[in-house]
Length: 66
Ligand SMILES: [Zn+2]
Image: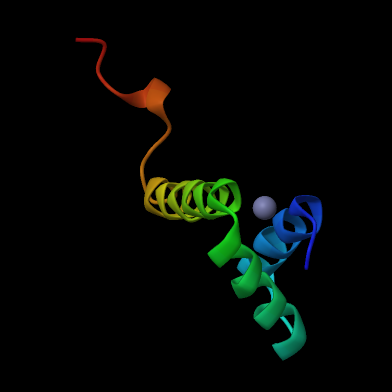
């Protein structure tokens, strides 16, 4: 069983590169057992998505003041 620290590391890693089948299996198993890491993963995916959507937007300081 992974520690939460290890599961968190795999969650971040999975955004940038593919996990090995062994990593993915143990990570999925950890998620089934650990609501905290499920929550962490959801936040991570949400932030990632929000970041990607924000990229094409102009910087906030160019928006009209009102
Ligand atoms: Zn955990």
